[in-house]
Length: 467
Ligand code: FHN
Image (cartoon, rainbow, N blue to C red):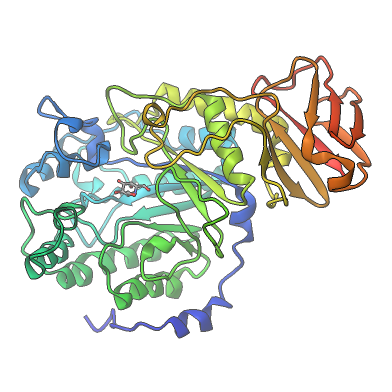
């Protein structure tokens, strides 16, 4: 136990921050793939005929053990059914590449405690299923082949199988005035393991993160999640284990207690300028309001809606990591594949306006002011694909400004903020993906552009402007 000392020092982190490589590669990447996969894909959000919405929130498929309050012994039996014979790491890495995604993060262990890799610390892992293949290793190799940066998600605090919830249960017992939400959210209060939280840390979580760092060299990200009630020295130890073995890895601030290299707002939340964010940041998003595979009622986002999220985020200087939830056979749902490839086609033509860009002094203009908060649930948010031709998002790179539209105008576009008194003289303007010369006129009302007849991509266009 002395191996994971109870040390906590922000000073240490500051001292050593300078030794970490820069995070610029991440900021330039802009767009990544999130993968939630595990035993819960066998259920698809339904437990013994009951949908998760009829049980306990949050209504996301990877929480089925919590929703249905499945005992640890019963849930463990799912491992005997897990045999995703159609899983093909190369095809998933290729899909990420074709989607224009530059990095990929997959759940190595989610809240149910099941490890998708060959763990020597716990036998609740993929090697003790009919599948018997190390999914993390296969996907890391496939990503390396495609030049996709590879990272893992690890649920370091919540583990319904092995006792991290003991802290939550302890907390609930110690604090009779703890809210129901605090007593139950994240905790296994229906069949708590006998472990203390510290047992769990010392016997499972710390050693698992250490074996992941030792056995999967060259990783780029570690996505810790849900640091509820963790103590600073616990968060710090999770940071130091990674730093000591793979210092190149960047870590989410969801490690807890202010540690970490990049900030993650709430799920499907796009922070706005009022959120004074000092670190690089990333919004994570779902395709269908569930991270794990959902077998029913999928309210799929459309490709232009996904593009909207990407532009809202990138124009504010952030990254977007969009999730897929493979089925129990290891297949990526068709709608996810379609959406990713459609946005990928747009990025093949217009990626110049996204990758490696930074926030410009104006992030967007136009009438469509849709601010999606919370679960990104389109129905609740009243989302309609009502983009207007006057909607533009802006990014900047190497002295060029990119004006990005999702909707074509009838014939002429007007970019209001590009008026001569606002931005000065425009030297040139061209449409990405088009060989035609663009006829444009800068006026005090903005930049008038007569679009060429050709449509490089059906989901809108980009004007590259030299000021
Ligand atoms: O509880 C998890 C959830 O299952 C999912 O992994 C998301 C992804 O950001 N994180 C937590 C909820 O915010």
